[in-house]
Image (cartoon, rainbow, N blue to C red; front, side):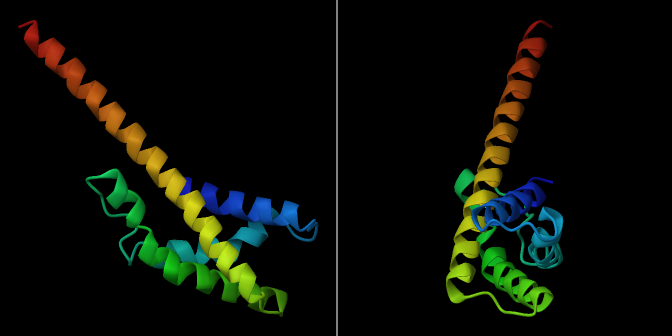
Length: 127
């Protein structure tokens, strides 16, 4: 769900920055979401990572493949390929947004697990 939100944010920011009012944010995000959710699992983007750095780095191979596919699909839908700078901006933007989501998710999961372990240790101590 977080990856989908990151892709929607990318599309919404792009539409706002370019004053686009044709179509919808969902339609703008669709080529990127389609490529991400078809390819990223195969490339290991959803494997459990033991560290924050590994959690964020796990998305890099997927970014390198899915963002160009998303740009290409978007070009097909618009019947005009995006300019080279768009491909670069898309890669960086999606990387930052998905990476930030992954870092947030990893940190909240670690904190939650730490609190659970702490609570469990206290409850076991009372025996």
